[in-house]
Image 1 (cartoon, chains in turn green, purple):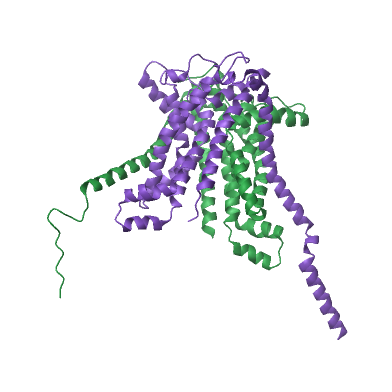
Image 2 (cartoon, one colour):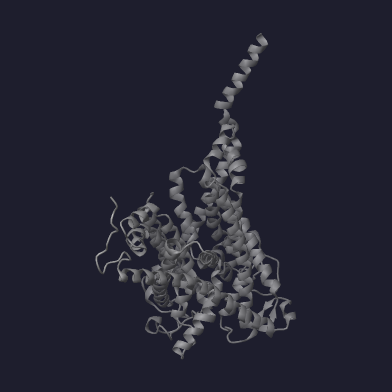
Length: 309
Length: 313
């Protein structure tokens, strides 16, 4: 017996209520608009920074980009000064953050009991949540007088070394958490195979787990480097302002970021279309490009680490 | 025969030694473990020293002035200077950040996780959000200066546009990627079976999202938002570029959202830390105690929320 085709009562359709469908598309449209706004933010950042940076380069004599130091108000824009300052601070920060962060990651991933992990990780997260201006105060009022000056008598009260250590302390939790994630993602079977061959824990950690997680560990270091380059307030508080070109970490000095803060604040705040004002955006463009490049490379390593297993 | 027997005995002995005596020979392993643990504890020790040092430096200020420190305005006299304008500024900034970053961030996360098909546009938005999260905060300050401050300038017409609203929008944009990323993770942790159950009984996509997915993901989303808020309240550099005022000024920014000078707690910390007088350093330490109480309280709440409601599916 053949079934008769179902007949819908008059006025009813399987499309559901029109109001309900309209609500669906309105909600969807709102969510899409919010997502597109994030692209708009990027466009605004790039456009604003590029526009003023180009204006800066067009306005000044390019010879001014090399000089005795970073004195934007006198028209001397020696970029090498603030790039060197950034390199010094970042290098010191990574010398601090790499061993401490990686050792913490190995311990948390390979040695710690679950209970220990659960109680220690939140504390590391708290360390990561401390505002950087507070670390700057710590570097200026404790690290310099209690650590730097006793070791190096000729250190200035504002110095790049203390700033570098402060930035390093801020970077430890980032290195530790990204590296720990990478090591915990290494399958248990690799560890079991290693133990099965009679390897000890130290051997398993260093020769099996660490190499297997190396992509994620490299990512942790790259992302931390990028963060250290972009870190502003520790340096602005603890290292003074950029001045004559120096490679001595015991001198006061500045990074690209602290140069920007110095330009934007103070009694002689720069405004308008002066070259000093526009140099703010030129430095911002450099900073943006360097950190973007590092983040893209770091992300690629994170993804590679995820795809491995 | 005896030679075979003795070699078997020797083998057995070495196996036994290998199984039972290994710990004795593993001195390096113990040293290594101790070094690892020491590194980890060093971070905790630094945190402890930092907090203890700040508390010690701040104690005289609180002992002398008590709550007066919280209720006095800024001053060029360190014995009178207080942080009330910073507290007001930080509170307004917090309200603006929460009011903007939470709805925009959540909407974007819901779109990317619940609605969007895997198209080129979707991938581009995802990559873009990840990259925005890595942009240094001082660069957001440039965005605030050249876009939001300039916009506020045209809105109010009288002032310079360096008002608390421009600062708040700058901070909201700064933490938006964090809100999006943590919300996406929270949504992703909700198992698909929940969604399928909803569709199975005829719910629409928005109904499934609102009534089934969001309640399950709420703790994670809230945790992420609170963490982002705490990050925003500690940010200094973007506010310095986007026009927060250093030094003292009169009045509260509360009375004049669009025209008044404003400052925030971390900006005051920056200003006072760099002053040469020791008395201002003590004031800075006291302001840090208040700032840490606010941001750490937010952090602790977030971590507790997560640990309390974290659900293994």
